[in-house]
Picture 1 (cartoon, rainbow, N blue to C red):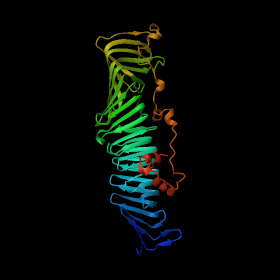
Picture 2: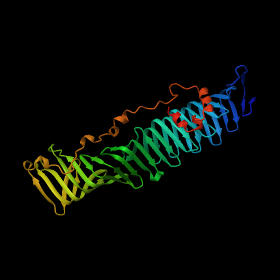
Picture 3: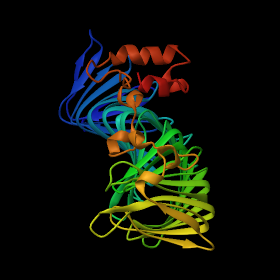
Picture 4: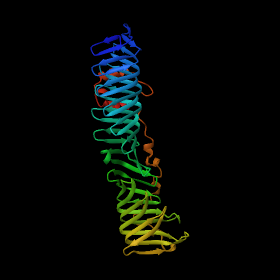
Length: 440
């Protein structure tokens, strides 16, 4: 380091330095080190623009600061503002985060910035990926725009969306725009969707809420309602407001539906349908009528993730199409009693047990009028059934126009951007405007 260049705010050391007095530029290509009040920067190639007080570093760029380190393929650094602009694979490692991107901005004074193109931030116990990611250490906040994936590294849960916010101190995630939470239930992924998703709480007690137009799907179970509330600690998933649940051939409705998981085995354990419980299944043999059962409440039991037993209690009623072992029609069973137990087979009801003074009749087909073959409150909603993970999204979700991310295809003039930052108090570096800027 035989050459030293100093000004009031920094010192440059290198083996050979080329100086263009007319252009007011200095250049080295044999490695150099720059030291200012906050940072030590090294690179193989560097150019200093004296008029704008800007360095341009290329190849093996490294910044060391007591609070963080930066590695980049190319970095432009303004000594007055201490703002850095990076191109190519770049990594910033702080005490509580690791930030990767391939085009980005970083205010080295306050550890605030954004990345675009292949961005990722490892943040507490979450990994945030997206087309554009904004980060602010002071407020412990990160947001992402377009093609987002937020991974819970402790619970192996994933949230996908086109806009998300992560609050580190509150350990929470907010997601919208085609948002879906994906969780593993006995080696089978459950997909939960809502117009808005919120995940809060410590890793051992996560709470997931899906708001408005909420739906979920797993291989043998699906449902929809206004909102979904899942408590990881209790293992209870609540379907709130006008819920409907489908399992195999069965459609279940009620005022409120709860799915209960065994947190040790991570398998579904039981089902509760509270108030106005109603079960309907299309008669798969006769292909004409519907088997139905209703009561005040329903309690179901799962075995190996399969719904095997259903108990209906209080003011129960049944309409059931009966067949012999050769699938020959016997009649239509219409019964009322205080409790009903249904034992479920692979596809249909295998057995119905009536408790406490059942009162019913088995009608031949010709003796039961068509208008008497449906219980009060019967509504068949088979056309609404969710049959795949893609069907949790409606037309609006599938036609979202992604926000244009500024600067990916047409890199901006960073000198002009830096000048704008210094002149405009409402610009990203000086205010919350960075969140808006990073998603434009």
